[in-house]
Length: 312
View 1: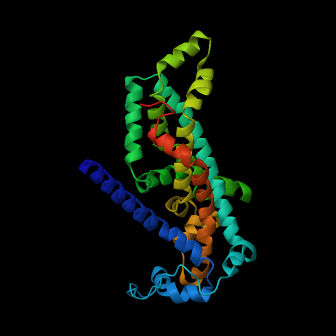
View 2: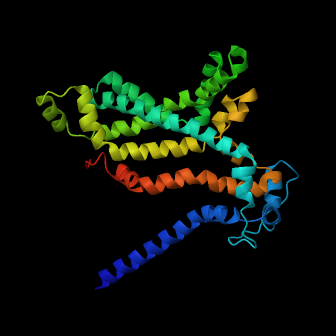
View 3: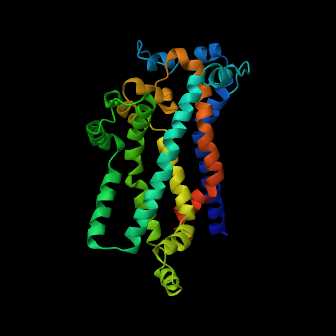
C-alpha cells in the first residue's frame, strides 16, 4: 500500500514537472504568435527598449522595461499584410530558405544512405578509421569547420562570384552552391544512419541473397524500408538545423549575393525599425517546422527509440 502511494505521488510529481517544462518551452512560441497580431505602436511600447539594445544603440537595463503580453490590446493583421503582401522581400527571403534547405536535406540523406550502407555492409579497419574521423568532424561545431570551408570555396571562386565573369543567374547559382555543398557532406546523417543500419540482422541479407537479390535490391528492399523511421527523423533534424542557419550565409555569401540570404539571417539582425514586423515574420518562419513536426512526430520518436523498427 505504501509503495503504491509512493508510486502515485512520483507519477503526479513527474506529470507536474513535465507540464511545467512544456509550458515553459511553449511560451516563446505562443508569445511570438500572439504578439504578431499586435499593432506596431503596441509592440514598440512593450519591446522598444529591447530592440534598441539589439540594434547597437546606447545600452540600457531592460529587465524593468519589457512588458510581456500574450493578449494584444487590439488585434490586427497589418503585420501579416506587410510581410506577405506589401513587401515581397520577406517572401523572397523565405523562399531563399526553402531553396537552400530542401536540397541540403535531400542530398545529405541520399549521400548518407549510400555511405552508411557501405559502412554497415562491409566493415573493416580502414572504414572504421574513416568512420572515426566522421565522429571527430561531427563533434566539431559549425563555426570551426566554417573557416576551412571558406578557404576551399574561395579557392574555387565560389565566394566572390563577380570575378567568375558569368551571367547573374550563374552567379546566384554558384553562391547558393557554396552553402549547399559543404552541408551535403556533413557527417551527422552518415553517423546516425550507419548506427541504425548496423543493427539490421544479417539473416535478412542472407535470405535475400539466396533469392538472388543484388546489392541494390538489398539496399532498396531491405535496408531502406527498415530505416524509414530513422530517415524521416534524421531528415527532420537536418531540415530544422539548416532552416535556422545564420553563420554560413553571412560568411559565404558576399557582395550582391546578400540578396540570397535566408529569412533566418533577417531574424538574427532585427533592428528597432523592424520591431513591428519581427513577430509576424517569426510566426511565418515557424510554419514549415511546426507542420513537419506534427506530421513526423511518430517517426521522430520511433527513429530515436528504435533502430529501423528493430530493437537493438
